[in-house]
Structure formats: C-alpha cells, structure tokens
Amino acid sequence: MSWQLASAAVLVLVLAAGLVWFERTRPSAKVVALVATLAALAVVGRIAFAPFPNVKPTTDIVLFAGLAIGAAPGFAVGAITALASNVFFGQGPWTPWQMVAWGLVGVAGGLIGRLLRGREPARLPLALVCAAAGFGYGALLDFYQWTLSATHTFASYAAVSATSFPYNLAHALGNFVFAMAIGPAFVRALRRYRRRFEVRWLQPAVAAAVIAALVAPVALGGAPEAQARSSAAAKALRYLDHVQNVDGGFGGAPHQSSSPLYTGWVTLGIAAAGTNPRDVRHGKRTVITYMRNHVPRPKDVGGLERTILMLHAAGVSPRNFEKHDLVAELGALRKPDGSWEELTDHTSFGILALRAGGVPVKELRKSGLWLMRQQDADGGFGFATKGGSSDADDTGSTLQALASLGWRHRTAARKALAYLRKSQNADGGFGQMNADSSNAQSTSWAVQGLVAAGANPTSLRRNGHTPISYITSLQQANGAVRYSRTSAQTPVWVTAQALTALARKPFPVKAPKRRRSVRVADPKPKQAPKPAAAAPITTTKSSKTHKSSRVPIAHIAKKKHPPPSHGQPIVPATTTQRTANNSITRRHVVSTTHGAAGSGHGDLGLALGALAAAALLAGGYLARRRLRVRH
Image (cartoon, rainbow, N blue to C red; front, side, top):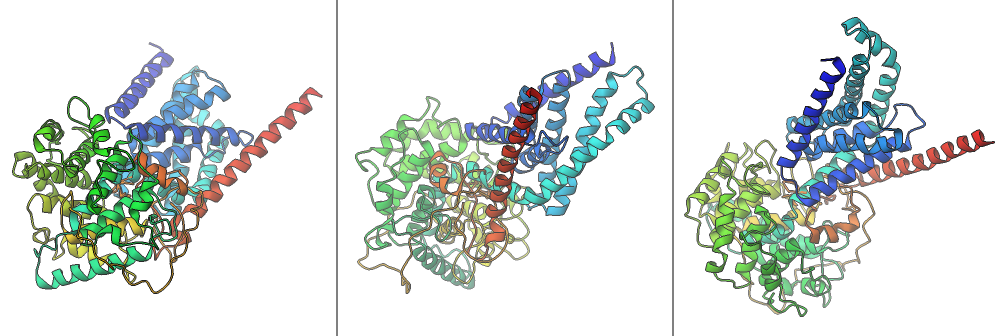
C-alpha cells in the first residue's frame, strides 16, 4: 500500500470517528446551529483575509469553539470550516488533511477548556496557544506534502517543513495577533452562549429554580447562618425591585432591555421570597403586564414551561392567559414516550409546569419514568439523555420534578442526591460540571435539589463552608449576587436565582398572598432602560459600573448563564428576549461591579467590526486586481 493510500485511510477513519463522536453527544438543535454559525464565521474570516497568505483568524475561531463549547463540537467546527471554505479556495486531496488538522485544533481547544475548569483564559497564554496551534496545523499539512514526495524519510520531511516554514510562521503570528485582539472576549461570548443554551432549559429552569428555593423560610441551619440568609434575601429583593424596567419587565443587568427569560427568573425569585410579584410594580406596570405582550409561541417548550411556572407563582391562571391555555399547549408538545424533545431538562420542567397547572400525578407518570431512565451511571442527570455528562443544574431540576410527583424516596432520587453530595467543592459551592469551579447559579440549583429531596443544605459542609454560605459570600453591598469569585455577569438573573436558593423552596412555588402596598422603598425614580448594544453575549469577569448588554447556561444559566453552569454567544444583547424563549441564553452581562472591561462586548464588537471592514477592503482589493488584469 502506498503512503498516499495509507494516509487517506487514516484520514477517513479520523474524520469518521470525529463526526460520529460529535453525533453521539446528541447535540441539540441549538448546539448544531451554533456549530454551523461558528464554522460560517471561520469561513468568512478565511475569505476576508485571502490577500494575506496564511494570516487568517480561522484557526483561532476553531480553537475558541472547542475551548468554549467542547472538544466534539470543536472538531465539527474545524472539519466543516475546511470543507466549506474550500468551495471558494478549491477542493482537492488536501481538503481532508485540512479538515482533520482544523478538527484537531478544535479538539485541542476542548482539552484546554477542561484543564481550565471553567476559568477564563488569560490573554497572553491564550495567544501563545493559538500560535502553537498554527504551527501544529502547518506540521500536519507538511506531512501531507511529504506523502507526495519521492522519498519518505525524516530528512525529506525536514526539507518540506523548511520550505513551508515562512508560511507557518506567518500563520502562527497571525493567530497570535488575532488572539491578543479578540481572544478572551470571544471565548467569554461563546461560553456565555453555551451556558444559555444549557439554560434554555434554564429559562424554564430559571423560572423553576427561582421559584423553588425561596418562599419557605425553613430554619434548617443554625441561627447565625439563618440570620445571614434572611438578611441576604432582603437585600437581594430590594436590589431586584430597584432594577425593574418601565415596561414592568426585567433585563439581565440594570438598564438592559427586558426579556421574558430574565422577567421569568425575577418573578420566581420575588415569589420565592414571599412577595407576590404583582405587588412589585413600576407605576402601574408589573411582570404580568410585560408578559401579556410576550406570550410564548405554542411550539416553544422552554417558554411555555417558564411562563406557566411564573404565572402560577404570581397567582395568575396559565389556563386562560391572553386567550391561551398554556397548560394544554405544553401538554400537546409531549412525545408519546412522555418526554419533551427527548431532553432531560425540558422534561423536568415540563413535569414541574404541568404540576403547577393542576395536572394530576397519574397523568405524568410516563414522563417521570422516562426521566428516571435518563440517569447516568454516576447518579446524576445531564441536559439531554443518558450517556452525556451529568451536571449539578439538571440533577437539581430533576430532583425537583421527581419530588413534585411524590417520588423523592425512589432509588433514582437517592442516587441523584448522593451525586450532589459528592459534587460539592471545597468552598461549599457547586460548579455546573464536577470539574468546574463554583458559581452561584449551579449552587442554587443544587440547593433546590437538596431541599426537594428532603436534605438540609447546611448539612453539606466542606472546610466549614456550606452552599448557603457560599452564595451569601458572593453578595455585594447593593444586594446583587455575583456569578462567581471572578465574574459578575448578568447580576439580575444571578441574584434572582440566588434568592430562590436562599429561600430553599422547591418548585412549583405557590403564589404569596397579595398586599396593598408592597413596594420596596425606591428613593430614586427608575429610568427607562437603554436598548442593549448589539454585541455578542459573553461570560464576564471584571471592572466596575453597569453596562447594558447581553446569557443561559446554564444551565446554564444560568443561565445560568452560565453559567452553564449555567448553563448557556455571538448573539446581540438585544436578542436575549428571543433567546430566552428559544431557550439558550445563559450567562451573561456585566454586573454592578463589572463594567466595560468585564463585559467583553466592546472588545468583541470592535473586533468583529474590524473583521467586516477587512472583508470589504479585501473584496475591493481583489476586484481592483481583476479589473487591472482585464484592462
């Protein structure tokens, strides 16, 4: 067998294994859409910089994709980028080599993401890694050239590499410059979006988690911690009241446009804290006023779940809301096997929402049994189906769903509770995945799951820290709760979910009694929110001041965003409303203590603007050359 045939066989096996790997992760439609979008962006970057040999942002984008959304999606982005871009540059025997090379860059990004364990990469190390990826990509393409040579020795490979070294060096330097310019902001954007789509469920989950943790002041901890929890909840409630928008809704951060996702989260947090959401208003507008103009579409599973939970928490019937029977619409979307979209996340919140809508347990038995069959070997639950990665967010929401059916003593619930106990970090909090550092949203999901399973959150101690003490340690002077030690993204969303965890009440939450005057003191008049700048959503870390931008998931958020967590992007901040309904927007915006530098929106917006300008210049340059040739 010749070198060419042998190498072609290896290439086919690697490509097939990588794409099958991606398919076996059972990516949701939103993940597939994100992979396609990133591949398209990488293709555009390659075309835009065509006049500059080997200086292109393509390798960086592929590596960022793997780092932010995982190794398997990263491989898919790289492989698709090579195949699609060669439609413009020419297909040939080199195409599979480029597909594998860029695919492996995506895998490398995924491995780096795992090593970082949720931490944000520093600018210079990230740029150096991107430069190294450029040399690695070149080394594999040199190997392709080597297979075509007459002799196949190390000396001949060295000769090929020496010939191509100037091009590989240009590639590596270009990667370094692009990474220094947009790297951290780009990664934050993708991570935030990832959490948002993991939080798509977060949207309902957001609604759900918020409801779950707060309303019942269960004195499970000692007096000092109970007092700290009560004080933190009061401060968080005041903060949420002060950031309500003039339309009655809420954005992910102060002065950010309202969206159904964030409005749902805050509604649940307020209800969990013991205040009826209809008693918190801006003028005559409440969250219900806002939602009357943002009824979810009949096919939007996440939006229906979240809206049913928040209406229930406000004491408004979801059976007849703006001439819609939301409970019937959600029930009609359930599959014959009892699941919603064959997703653990949506099925958990489908059960919670229908229970809030008055559907009896016997009619949800099939959904509960399907849900228990998705339990992973480690006892946890993931976003999709059995066989994926378990996470604290989905395990917490699943425990709440099982408890709402009266099944908290079943074996599946006991195993899930054990999974949460093992997943606690040394600081008392929880990360979305086992290897992730702690964040407020994943910790809140875990608290809700613990309470639903009948466990006392304060009984989980690591180095003297509990989940509740971790959350209260993140609260700032103005009442907002940070996402983590290093990030204050989407402070409104994070604070709302933390508020439900502080209350420690699982879903669905009953509506608190109405009061005549429940307006939390607000000495200053609220200002109309400024439209969020069209900038990509990013997971933030830094600075001081409010900023209008951005968010899911996670679970995440998540959410959640992460988060995730939390949960879950190259989407303009103003689209958070849509993402909320479509489910994926999970983490986030700048917090009260993080500003322009932390948001990453400005940097990424400028970088993408520069990319577009470069594309126009490149087009003009090529057109001019063609005209010169013709004349």
